[in-house]
Length: 339
Image 1 (tube, rainbow, N blue to C red):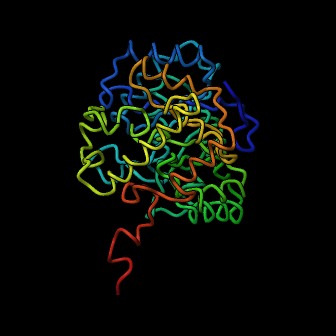
Image 2: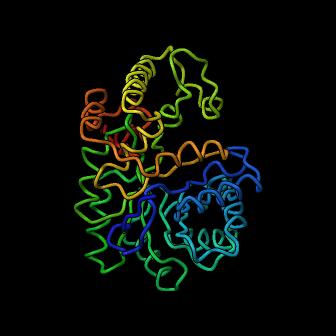
Image 3: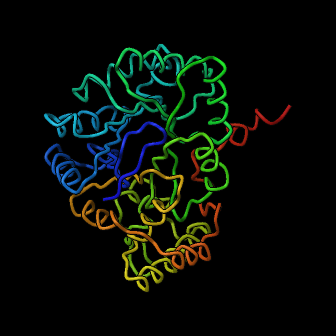
């Protein structure tokens, strides 16, 4: 396992981190299975576990808390808040009112007195940067969090938050958690240069592109991945965008074979090769999934393989732009761009 410094914090984290989104109802992972996955991950050298309050409406945090009981100090624990937790309109977002409550709820579910990294799950356009950063700064001063970060922020919002922190003399985000894979490279054009400029640690989620790069999506087989069952449109090969992705996957699989690698090793090695990326978040549902992903722990792709990847998917290109999660609201809501 490789280790890297998380931004400018001085904290050392593994280049592969364990994402716990699949723990619980989402991935149909039981407590025993979640504990076994955590055990194997820690034994392999992973020392960062990332979850969120909205994963299973708190269930993932509960499973993680029980799995890490008795060894809290041996790992870097991260969670997130801001996504809706109920139909109540104030049980979401980046307001002080909600973040204080949400963190207490997360700490209770996790069974700990603090988290190492607390992340705003999405930018909240209804709340000012100063409001959110002030609340996070106070939670840090109270000892309930050690650091705070953002997740899936557009580049300009990362810049704005850094500026607001400086102007108001508040704590600043020290990490960003974006979606990044061979098939979704758009952040190379804007987000990653900004995170490098500000010295932010980067925890890349979906490095296997929702299973497209797991080896389970191939031209000669039926797609039966867990994700395809509840997000069928993302895997519908009658759609032109998905056919483009499948063509890229087939070419990448041949490249991996020629390099003596699995497709998973190629995919994870690509993400961790970028100098701006600290860790790739893997989200196994089973021990077998974890083992196949751990095989990439020490994968270092040579320059010729990285160049070949660039020929298949050009730098800065998203093959599924409609699946991006950092699109500015003005591009999604017509009322924001029309008089």
